[in-house]
Image: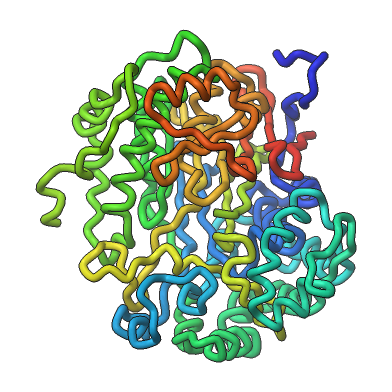
Length: 534
């Protein structure tokens, strides 16, 4: 129970339905859909579409989508991969001929064909109740009539001024006199509203064919891209249902989407920390943080060595998640010191073979949806297809140009992907859709949250609120809320801690308390959103 003398907020409670998103308008849009007879999937898409308008640095219809969904009364977790593929002409040789030696985050070559709209239509047709024509109306309204910039959105916008300034169309539409719009400014996107109206009326074809696709392709070609309208036509069907992966953790089972996303590494971290004792000193202790840092270092090493599109590379998921392998990693971790250097990734014979929105919704029937949509970095590439109002992601920045690496760019290949929805099951029932955004941080963020709640007993909101850290580039990036004595102890263990400018990520979760018959939601104070139930 939180101390009501101190700043903070309580978890949200409800019995008929709940939504948790990073923007209040999106949460409200989700609840409006639930009250209008839609289900959790409809509400999630409606909320996400709103965020694609009012949180433009983080997400958009020019981005990608992943989803985990558990229908009411089912023990089956349904996973969808809505990540786009590189153009058919995107070969390492072609990019090197264009003068590239590494992927560039603002280059047209970092734009994969967006998968979000393909994903929305497939999810809606398969598991929704209302049509896209109804679901997208709130987003259309915000694009046409405008929205007021909230504090975190305004801050993220300021951080992207340099990127937006590189592209004349983006500067015209998203900057005012070379600067980001001020906090509280009203911002409209009539071109995006027109595109959303077309999608509402005609579905994914309105995005992947015709005027919108032609506008996007022309924009990318002018910026040096290799994209064609044929690439976009193929992209209409890029979203696909896939078999989720999972691990037993404590008395539950945690589910993730399989590669090309990094969900596998959430499961690895859980598997490692699950073999270590719970720190008696508590969730904010140096001992607990040290173990988590070391587990993450080992896992991110595996990510960089193995993660890729499994349709074009051998990704040894089963072996990397095996109890034997994770047990050996756990034994490497010492409470007395940080690892001076990491052992080689995986086993010897393996060689033979940042900005996002996350939301979750649970409806009155018990359908549970874990949903994530992203442009990757702030405003993606910063390239705007001005006629259609579509800002284009930079997911291809996750590729490499290193020949022979599993994640080297190739035609029609998906890049390493950071966005990962999560789902916790117990006794064959969904008990928590959850997620933590934040690019590379997401596996660390998810496992910190799950451990905070299920291992250390913090309620959903407290578990999200707790200060965070993560290993990055041989250092440990810590939020200001990490106590000084903890930082000092981590440094003495051999870590090199540094304060991070912006907080790590942002998360949402809804706990389905089946014993009490209520829903308990939390939303991250690092963003502008909220959880609401009714």
